[in-house]
Image 1 (cartoon, rainbow, N blue to C red):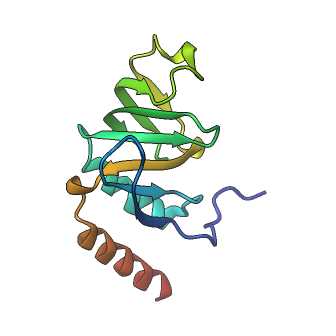
Image 2 (cartoon, rainbow, N blue to C red; image 1 turned 120 degrees about the vertical axis):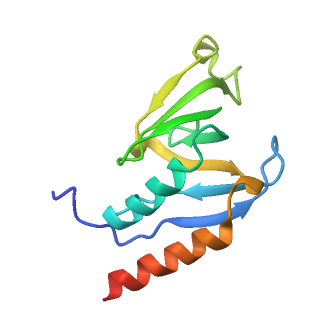
Length: 132
């Protein structure tokens, strides 16, 4: 199986409400291809130092400060807390973590920290470049 082939499913950008947080932007990464990965990589690099919530595919949600992100969309968080400590008591003692990009379902961001118009324009430009 070729793991480097671009995915046919696009990344999804949507705005949503969450029960524990004020209005936040929620990004869902659906196996981004190389060009989508570059777009999201540069986007996440601009958010280093901001508080985010990362929801994993196993339904674990981790709040923390974005410390770094790499080209594979692996994420390092500092000062973490778990949104459901009763379900994941073993995570209470963890303060920093590394999250492999392939296990991320959503990344929730503060809506006021993101210029959605700029992000949409960049996504359109990327789509036009792919068609050419």
